[in-house]
Length: 542
Image (cartoon, rainbow, N blue to C red; front, top):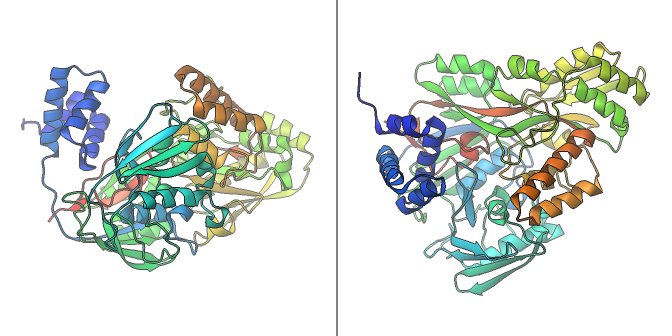
């Protein structure tokens, strides 16, 4: 029997998931001291932590190859694609943003905030936060990173004229001030222990102070913009002055948005692409059976949801909303549609792996009789109800057809309208009375609730309005007692489950198809391609 490699020994010691998370953190720049601290914080004894750290560092020691051009396709493209971090709205935007920019913090494989442009951060009361900026960081145009860049980048989200997708998150900021040559202090209206997590998300990337024209994609990130054709493709090249020594490894990346999954897989297996996101489970066996290709699986809180607007159309009836939720045959959808690459959902957005998941919420089961009861109470009668779906909202077409079949059994006529991937998000999602959406995983419950379920959330697709929920959100955000915070989030999950016009049948694993020459991928629970941040961590073998 061949000797175990250091990676295999690390997996045997910690489990594959934990071992890969440690290696992923090392790839993202974690130092030995930080690694030891992480192991000790996890309860490991000092001697064991030292040997485990050494093993992890040895497994990480393989020297990545520099050079090469990577061709990548994501599952989303839109005429609204943007180079402004504040306005990013799809995964292609996030992928491109991580190539061009950095934030004050970044999120590791456990979704814990780690220093990035800020070399450290601290707060005594969770209300006033101090961020110390790194020295020697340059923007792509040669300008040195300074406190005024951070002040500008954060405060612009509060300006309505910016039309920031993160405005609802930024509203909690009271002030951002330069308090030293390399120091910025952020003061919140109320305490929020999750601020470093929020600032590690894509919209809060740092741009040069005063920027109004974002067409050059100027950031501090690992790549510089070479070409940007909205809705088609982007090309980036290595930033030779990147502040992380030795990074990135690749010379160039071409990123395209290709909505058709079969086209993405065909392009991968024909050699026209090296990495593709949004792989359908039905394509996994074909990819794995093709020499030189594999599939990388990331379990996450991503979900495809049925959004029923409650301010117009059938969704104005709470009984119609409940009827639709009882028509979800969740185990069948997981097994037949996702082929097991999913976890059961329960019409609320916190997945079972999340630390604030509420296990005491009764699972809503497929129940045609209860669906029939609520449908009759809704008074819709023989009304034909359109349901909009698209392949770009993962599995939505298959789920819509299953719903249509179940609805026939209770006398509800659903008209499934399959729309093309191109323009779906800008034309149909949040505009149609009933349409499927797709929500990428978020790093905290607070961010997820704020963006998608707060009464004025920018992506509150069902137009659900609940003042009690909004109040609980503020209470949970500022609560330092973990048990109380857990209860607040449990109550909020219950409110969404009971009243919001959103059906969440399952949480989806992200499947990335790739050439086996591509190395360096590690799981980040935010979604595929390392939570959109793969670019500076991967390399191509000869």
